[in-house]
Image (cartoon, rainbow, N blue to C red; front, top):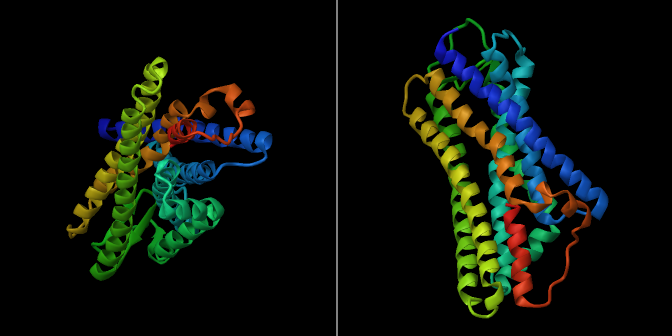
Length: 324
């Protein structure tokens, strides 16, 4: 086996080995929280949707890539190709949209409670499942068209506007359908990236402003408060950096491929590796920054409390931000 093919196979196998245990670990932790506390907070419901989407991404895209890398041929038939590709596209989109939605919800938790933010928080809290279902419906409507264009890979001639997907091909037939599909997907992802960047920046801004405002109020706790706020800020920045870096490069390559008359399979596989890396690696960042996920006692003992003072309310928000 060529070194290039070996490295590619090892890369996807590594994502498989890391992604499945990491996401399933968080899934089981949330199941424990649901059993013990009888409910899940809205932030955890959104996070659960993201984790489930990550698992579908890994099984529908990383697993076939890894199996192809070790020499397994003819794994999927025509119908299975259609199902696997639609599942991957929708779950990948739900991971992106879910992360942006979670960031927006975190903004409502720590923002100054004026009329707008109060109403938005109530809407998200009451209709979090409905909003997730709506996002799923929108993404499914965008990607269901790929069911028509997807077929199992054969020796027959395809058009120049074809994506080679290991066992399957996504043949758009004409430039018009290819560019229209690409434009819709790109616009949706730019909106998601912009929303995440803006809301995360606002979260960090509020945390920094709060750190300045409480200076001198509790001199004995100054060092501790600074540590909490810096950790909360770092967790937001790290996840945003991972998100923007991986999906930013993914979308840059995708936009570049829209200008090509013939799409190189190696370029598309690089996009797949970048986008699936987020689904495989983000759980470890969540575990590292969320006490409920890496401390056994916090899952079974911590309950949501109603803080009366502003300082305790903000402190609670820091804990929820770290779950981001």
